Length: 535
Image 1 (cartoon, rainbow, N blue to C red):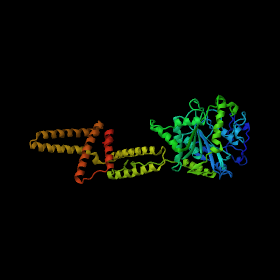
Image 2 (cartoon, rainbow, N blue to C red):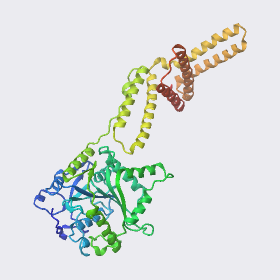
Image 3 (cartoon, rainbow, N blue to C red):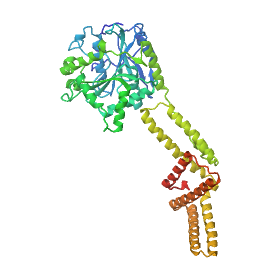
Image 4 (tube, rainbow, N blue to C red):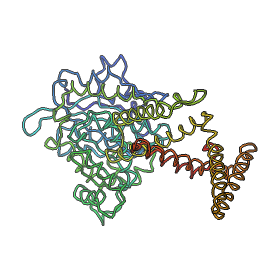
């Protein structure tokens, strides 16, 4: 494709040196107008849905000179209003320059290319790529297509977290070299955001034993501590090594963030940049002229851009170990955006459909079988859905899911038992049995002269009678519910003990571990809650 740098009139530019609004949107007139420009290929609609401009993407990547060539895709991503588009325009200046030793050009030349400006409001939205793909000869003689991609900044006031995550994830999935643009330092929240965004991207990709993404470059702008770590690549390497170091005394959460980042990228590096100067930061009419930028910034800007874009450092886009052509990149772009457009959460099922509401009493064995069936289905569903956080987090939440399902099952047991009139009469029946047994025992022992035992039985019978009257009063008035729950709990324990004893004497069978676990959990919740629903 043409390697001539486009002519730009100041009339095409806004007062800050960026392209005027609307000058980079693709229109039907672009069929004849071949001037290179930024083209928006990913649009975010007002309802926060995503739309891919396939026509514009096809026009660029399916051009005859590009579609069958292997691609190098370089993207810059990060927080909004941190100078990403400003940096991309210097990369364009490098790519258009014929003399790579003097690629920065004249000191009085305005900066053109991707739209940028000073201020606090966002400029770039969605994802933009430069309409001209650069053909570069690598040292081995292979001619490759270099694609430059600019992205919307994260965490602006008009975007949701999902918007930011999707744009960052897509740019990371498509690019072979991702520049993570940061301000002043690499803070812990920067690493956590990177973990979130890359995990969001990994969900959309096929599972593979290889690392899902390629090169990540931390670009720290306005670095203020050159006395600790020098500007440039060497200082950045030492600084990054310190920031991503994993030690035993670190909290588990901090270790997991760093392990995740290492597991996602094949190459990780860092470059420290000085501040460009107060004129750049405070002058609203700054248009990118080199004479207004600090010399130290210009010095390291030359190093950074040459390091990123020199032919020997260009990294081809790979997916599953295969180099991707322009034609293949289009297909992957379409496939990835469809995943994010159609993402839906599964709808949970409720056990209330089985035993809730106006459903009649269900046999306990049938309820347990239904619970086991739905429990197994839920675990299968959990394991079959892609999750963020890796295997360790998945295992932790699986245990939490199983615990919550067992706890819910205990509540459903109580809900189902409340519909059984015999279950509701268990407490008075138990107390009547105790009173009857004590009455008979007291009569027999008194007849044979064992007065002490007879007196003890009469005392227990009296206490049981008082307890029965108290329980009846509580059930009728609704007062002293905690005491009523204790009476029900004691009566339930006596009832269960009688059933266990009878079962062991009858056929020697034992309850299953699952039933024992649920029964223990049931009794524990009863003691914990002390509520009328447990009655």
